[in-house]
Image 1: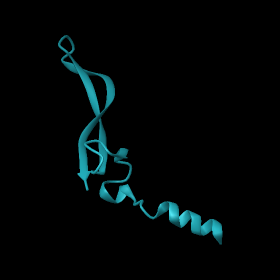
Image 2 (image 1 turned 90 degrees about the horizontal axis):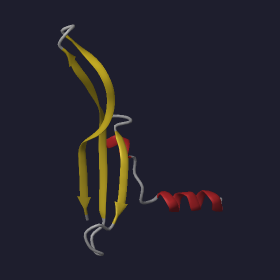
Image 3 (image 1 turned 90 degrees about the vertical axis):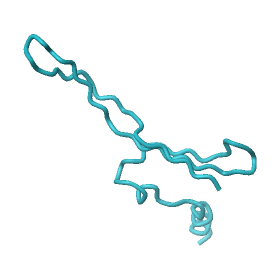
Image 4 (image 1 turned 30 degrees about the vertical axis):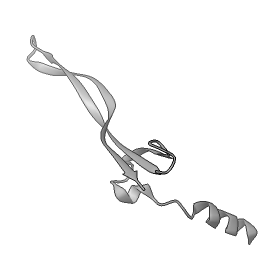
Length: 79
């Protein structure tokens, strides 16, 4: 029973971030004091993939180059 109580105490300040976005969309979270010692800040970063293509003038087509992970939205919540 003590083990269960310890787990509850550890998770009392946590919440599920996936409910704020589509599943798998939130890739990074940072919690800390960034501005001063009296303000707690929660930062959520949502990312997506950017597809890069080159225009091939000779064949009149677009050639795939790469997928790059980029951040599309960053949320900062201060309390």
